[in-house]
Length: 625
Image (cartoon, rainbow, N blue to C red; front, side, top):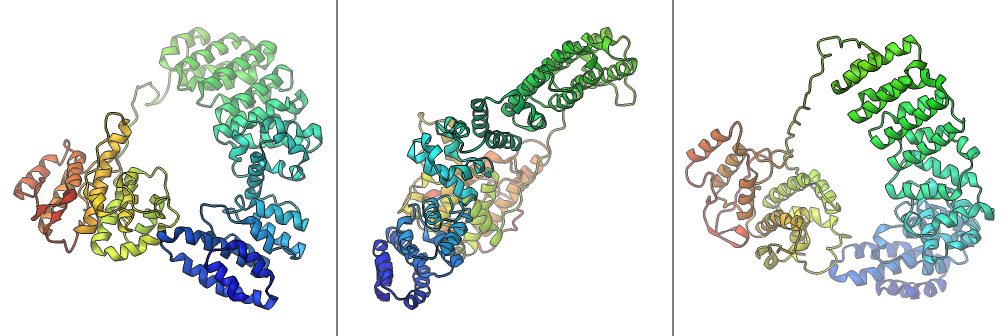
């Protein structure tokens, strides 16, 4: 029977595995994991053309290994292994069937170990939940399990049943403590009403929901998360006592949270202040933080609130006006004017010491445009003292250009390429460095480069299929796909079709680096370049003329014809004004024909701008060149 189990696994028939395992003796099961690991190692080496077979074998391995391991840690490690998964959900029901009859405490241990695996717990929620039900163990509260529960509830699309969910009392408080709120929770309609109805049903208390929302707002979050939390707070309709009990929290949100959260907290604090729930000192402390914020809307609203508080209690001017005076230094002169008018209306309510401090603040902080108005409020103002006290209109210094680091090599290059392959929007200059490093490595030892890159490719959307069109890939992805044989030479040989009028300007601009990357990949497979000419020397994308002249001289010395698109982009990027340009032009002219133009090197122009019959460079210049 052992061989029958292994044959079912090799043939990728996971549905046959539970019955076959059930017929084995304990000793036979214990001997299976070692042989299953051998099949697992073999499957890792299968190419993209065996993708469907690999998926079925992975599922069969997952079921068989789960039923054969005896230790909870080993079982959870096997089930959660990334190399036994693919884009389809694992066969959770089959795994549950092979674990039938195990000790409940053992099942609970496996469930909690799986729930603690952040990478797979959300996907494995159906399996973990089934183990929890069988074992009767406590409900896991790890982030992945909480998100999986939200997914499960959301798919039912009947959120009113949340009151009958036995896990809700445990998991609802955890909704607000996860590293990020679940997408289903934030975007699916109905969650606010369902959660707001739980206290009345006795599932959780109001304090759990209110404290969870407030604590989450204090942490900050994305605009969609903030919107959801504020909607839930409004649906709960907090009483004045509930709002007053959290005064310190509202103050922290108003001071540091995103604008939407801060505006809500500001409104709550305003209601408390008008109801006498905030002392003058508390309002001054809150205002000191809010008036320091850059959002003009919040600053204006706080000045209005302070004005209302002063009309209600003129004796609070000594506490509040010094805080208002901080707005004299705000970048917006309209807010400076508003603060000056507010101080002027209530200046009679402060003593001589406070008045003098306010006048000093006005003299130092206010814009010169408001000095005349400040003199009307305070009388004569003290003149600024010190050599830098006089107001001078200055522009900020221009940013210093940063050089682009030389291309990486060896393991560092592989790490950078791995990051770019999995990046949705890679940085342009990081792509430039990596592309230059790939070109150099392909020139030195293309087989070693291919061997280093291949382990990075499984799992990428373009790797497991057939041949691709080059237009679907960019930069390092296109180069790696060409080395891995996913983009054919015929495809690379063709010049990329220029986007027509119907395309946006982003597509038209992307055509330029795409053509150059296609050319570099084609040359790497036919006549490798020692390095690229157009790699910028500055992170702004600029290329120093002296560097371009040296690179062209190295090409000429090595007998290499530049790539057409690479040379064209180098000429577009090279700096044409400023120091060193004339000297670089003279140096290029002194080198004679081929030292600084498009026509260096020997051999006819091949497809993609490559050199056919030209000599292959033996030693590229230093990476700083």
